[in-house]
Image (tube, rainbow, N blue to C red; front, top):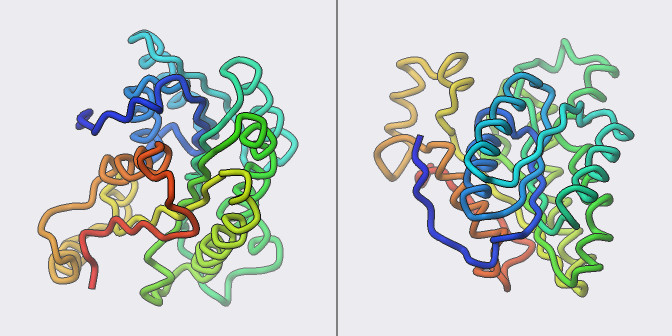
Length: 255
């Protein structure tokens, strides 16, 4: 696991919230922000993984706190956000990372399934933003980073509700950027390509997928979670002070 990142001095001491931070891309984001000296609160349903990560980073002197939370439970998630505010300070960076790209077909999705998929891939991001915006306004600025997807852009099959949710996340970014810009709150979409997380490697990346990646990316090699974390650091820092309402794609140049 690479720990080398550019150093953004302004991130030191900032309070950052990462959803889905116990594993995958989210874990790398938690580690990267902690390495910058930020105070990091993260939530996840994976209690043991989250507790292990928080304990490890805390043992190194990092200001990291974990709350086991189902982000689709609006009340519980709002309570977790309030807890972070009390223990770590006002949240000025929100990374809406949590999602689930579980495969599904049009035929098998009923109304309840649709609502569950929307809740885990879109709804929580909206209400997390609603919860932290007053903190950002009170401190004079903030950065909201919504995780998008190249999947819907490429018209990928196999997860129509996930694709719809991610397309909506891009729209939400644009709308909130306009609404919150006067308060110096930046809102951007961080758009990963096919990232080689443990989950992707275990479930979806076979030899045919590797051939597709090699043909489709302009750059050789794999898009890794740390590449996404690096972009999140940039978007959270004042290095991106005049960046808002944009898509920042990290996909190895997929064409």
